[in-house]
Each structure stands twice: as C-alpha cells, then as structure tokens.
Image (cartoon, rainbow, N blue to C red):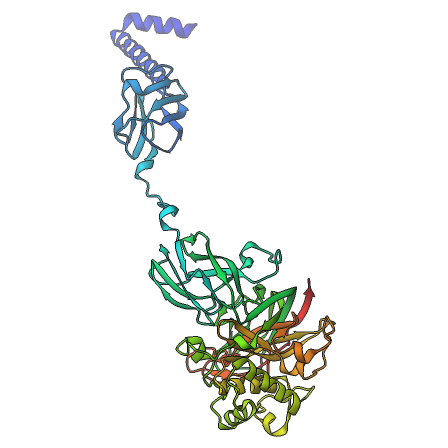
Length: 561
C-alpha cells in the first residue's frame, strides 16, 4: 500500500516518472498484441498427398493442419509450379483440401499457401511421364503355323512348316510332335508331346517363315506345334505312318534315383579347382520325363552336355571332404517293335547327318578296324537288308559268345570278345554296335542302369540301330543271351524279345559316346570306363599339384511308382 502511495507521489511530482510509465505501458500493449498475433498465425502443414502419382483430371486429397476453415482469396495450392484455379477446388477445410488436377499438371512440388505462410512441400509425379514396360502384342508375336507339308510322313522324313514369327534363328525354340504313348499316361499336358531331337539331328533349317524338321523317333499321328520364347503356336495336323512296322510304348514306371559322389582333399600344394561332370538321365521317346529334383551343393550348371557340373576349390591350407548328392525323377516305358522285313530298304538318304554321325568311327566304336569289318561281312554274307543284317549279327553273337556275369576290369579292350569268345555286357554292346557300323548301319551303344525286381540297380549297356522311315530299334544282346537278372515280368522267350524290344527296367544315362568338352583350360581329366555313362570326362583338375580322392557310387533306386 505504501508502495502504491509512494509511486503516486513520484508520478505527480516528477515529469520523468510520468514519461517512463507511459512508455512502459505502450511497450507492454505492443508486446501483448504481438504474442496474440503470433499465436493466431499458424503455418499450414501437409501430412499426406493422395495420390502421389496420378494423371490430369484425378481427384487429389491433401490432408494436414492449419489450412484455414475457408479458402480466402489469397489461399491456394500449387502443384508442379502451377497454381490451381478457384474452379479446381472441391473442398477446403482446416485439415483437408480436395481438388481436381488440371490438364497441364506436371511433376513437381505440392505447396499449400495461406495468408499465414507456405507449407513445407510434398511431391507429385505425373503418371504419363513415368517410363513403363510396353507389353508385347501376343497376337502379332506368337508363332503361327499355316501349313505342314507333306501332311502324311514317316519317322525320319523331312517335313516343312510354313507360317510367321518363328524367329530368324532357332536359338532355344523347339518343335513338338504328338508322342506315341499310351492314352492318359502323361503326367502333364506337355508330356503328351515329344520334341524333335537335337541328338538325332532332326532340325535342318529355320527361318522366320519356314522350318525344315524331321519327324522324331516315337512320334505319332496328331498335332504338331512350334514353341519360341514368345510362346506356343497353334496346333497343326500331321499323320505319321510307316510301311516298315509299328512301335508300341507301354508299362510306364516312375523311378526316384539317388546319385552320390564323395570328394576328399588329402592336401594340395597350391590352390586347385576340381570340376565334376555328373551324368544325368536323358529325355527321349522312352524316357519322356527325366528331371533333376534335388542337388547339393549348388551346381555351376544343371545341364551341360547332359551332365551336372560342380566346381570345387581346394586350398593348400585346408583339407575338405565334400558329398555331392543328386535326385532324379525318371519316367520310363517299355517299347515293342513289330517290323515287316520285306519293307525295310537300305539307307537311301546317306547325306543325312544322322547317317554319317552314327556310321562313322569314334573313340569307343572302332568300326573301321579291319577285324570288325571282315567279321561283319562274313556273318551277313550277301544279305543287304539292314534289319536282317542286324538280326544275323545278333544271332551270331548269341550262338558264338558267352556272357560273363562279373564285370571286367576298367580299361579292358572290348575287342577281346572276338578272340576270347566271352565278355561282359559292356563288351557285347560295344562289339554289336561296332559290327553294325562296319556294315554302315546307323547304330549307337547305350549306357545306363538295369533295375531288377528287388529294386537293385547295376550298370548296364545295350544298343540301338536305326531303320530309315521307322526309327530306332533297341537290342539288348546279353539279356537275349541269358544274362541272369530278376525281371518284373517273366519272359517266355528273352532271345526273341530283346531283339527289337526293351522292358521299362532300362534307365538311360547316355546314348552314344558323349564327348564332354573340358571346362578347365590345361586341366587334367579323369575317365571312368565301364560305367553307367559313356562319357569322355568325369573329373577335371586345374594345373598344379593336387592330391584328392573320389568315390562315385552307383545310382540307387529310392522308389518306384
């Protein structure tokens, strides 16, 4: 109270006190006005923009804060540097703005501006300016077959497919023919068809509008189509028939096969790479499905020249032991042929690649050796019919050679059979094939496994020879000669059956001698002779000193369905 009286006396007595008091009151009022104004001035804030990518005419919704309850004349939204005109706003509230994007909207920043200031920007992208993948027009890129000529053909005969969009080169494109399999036996739709076989040199010419291809072994009357990277063509009709005879597939069996190998590094003097070529079961008319379902460790290539390739690096400091495990699922059919020998003619298309490839000598089939040539000619004498020649060779071997139950040692010469008059399944298959080639009959040895009724498997070899306008004919000389094995079905006359027919207990790993190309330059290669696969390389090691051991196990049948 005394303080107030003292201030009142001073205020009346001294002009300076009165001036200071007035100045303080003015400053106080101005400060109070500034605080109120600052609190009332709230900058707009953008929380979301929907859509962030859009097109002219789209509805844009901006949510946030401090937009104002009503849009004033100085309030606006700017998109990509352009202000939205008054007619573009559908809604404006303190937390949401709706507007229509104009026809000239561009990519850029989105800003809300009011009398209190501008928001921090968001971003909008015009959909028209974003690069997208243009999907091909399948109507113009799918292959189309317009005609097949001739409309009736036999196996091995050249047919011409005309149409469009086949591609200027074949690359990975394929041609599929209806398969000669029992009705309803295929496990998937594509297995009702078989592909023209590269190993039989069926593909001869390919252009964007015309394809020359030979009817593959195992084809039947029905549909044919072209498959390219763009997709599959329409079906075209083809009638397949032969005056030579018939071929029947039946008794399908599905096998689960395990194939393992162990590699043990005992010590390398330098870093070394070991490459392993693991054979795979082949796909053909008898084995329309043969797939690798499991593989450990991860291979470098799942299928290179019909082998799975693993590459393992050994260091000089670390010893390693590695197990390679593979599982295959294989569908296998028995095949029976009925041939009318009167309609079999000597091979006429001797310029065909199949003929030259499977009548010439190779590292396994020494068909130019004079001992084989003279023996073959002495057996067939004046007979010129290739089917009857093959039968004469077959009968001669059964009558003059005996079968060894035990497999001979690796490196043994199959030609010993001519002198010793006895040999194992490998000797019989190689010699039989060689004698046929010496007569210029296309033939090849087949390597694989034979499965008995107890599901035991062991390496086995047999042969196939080719008849023009008919296809491949299987022959198992040693089973015809009486090699003991437990068949699923008892055969009354194995000798007759195994010339031209084969049961579904023969699983093929190689047809012919597979000249595997090396994967390591200047490497050391290892072969496995008299094994279930006839291939030139099984293992390779890079240059340098390496000390390792390998154990290849025989394929094991883990299941049959």
